[in-house]
Length: 404
Image (cartoon, rainbow, N blue to C red; front, side):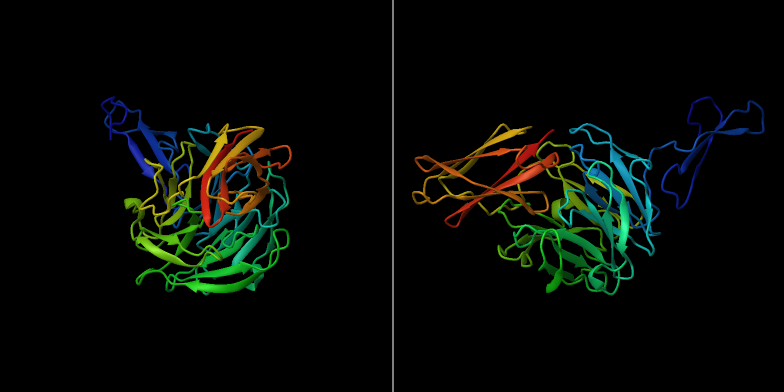
C-alpha cells in the first residue's frame, strides 16, 4: 500500500509470535522501476499481542495510586506494564527496568496479584496448564516489586488441567480465600483460608458448577450489585462472560445466574476478565484477554448495577466527605431504625472484598453516627476502597477514593 501518498507502493510485514515491535513498515524509496524498501519502523502500530492466550491481572505495583498491568501468555511469558498515564487517562508501557518480566515453566500462564501475607506489597500467583499454582513472593517493596519463586506448587494443589486462580475475602474475616477455575467441566473450586492474613493455609471448601456447556473457567470477583457480597464473573471458552450474583453472606461460594453474556461483552475464544475502574470515573471497566493473544478494553458507560435488587433500607444512609480525600475522611451514618446506643459496624474493604480496617462509630444523636478515618493511623496505598456499614440486618456500601 502507498501509505505515505508519494505514488510508490510501500511494504508491511507482521511478525508472528512476538509480543511487541511486530508490525514493520518498509518505505519504498525508489523512483525507478525496481522498488527499494528501507525499514522505517518496527512498531508502525503500537499494538500488544502476546501470540496466544492473553490473561490479564491488575495491581498498583509501584504504589502510585493507579492500576499497573500483568499479562500471562501461552508460552510461559509473564509481562508487566507500568501505568504512566493520569488517573483519568490510563496509559501502559513496557518497563522492564522497573518491572522485570518473568518466564514461568509451563504453558497458558494465568496470573493474579494479591497481598497474601499482609506485608503491604503484592505477591504473585500463576496458574498453568499442569493445574498447579506457582507462588512468587514479593521480596521487594510496595514501590519496587521483586518476585522470587517460593514454590512451583502452592499448597500442593493440582487441579488437573489449566488452573486459573483468583483470591478474594469470601467470608469477610480479613484474609484471602482462593477460587480456582479449570478447563475440563468449567468447575470452580473454593478453598477457605483457615490460617490467618499473615500466615495463610487453605482447606477445600466446595465446588461450584456453572451452567451446562461452560469450559475453561476463569473466575473474577467483584461486588457489582453493591450488596456487600462478592459476585462472580466467569470467562469461558466461548468468549462471553457469565455473571452470577453472590447469595451467601457467610462464605461466598453460593451464586445465582443473572446473565449469560454480561454487558453484551464478547471477545474471541477463552475470555479472561479483570474488572476495575481504570479511569477513576466511578464506572466499572473491563480488560478481557483472549486466545488469539490480544487484550480488549471496555470502558463502562453507567455506574448502575445490572438488575440490581439490593436497596438501601429507608432511614439507613451513609455519607462521606471529602471524597476523594488525602489525609482525613469524615463518615456519617443515618440509621433511624437502629436501637438507641447500638453502634453500627463500619468496615473498610479493598477491591477484592478483603477487610483492611474496622472503624469505631460514635453516636451523634437522633439516630446518627460519626466516624473518622485518618490515613496516618491506618497507612494504605492510594486507590479505591469500600465502606460497608451494617446494623440490625441492614447494610449499605459506598465507594471512597484515597489519593496521595
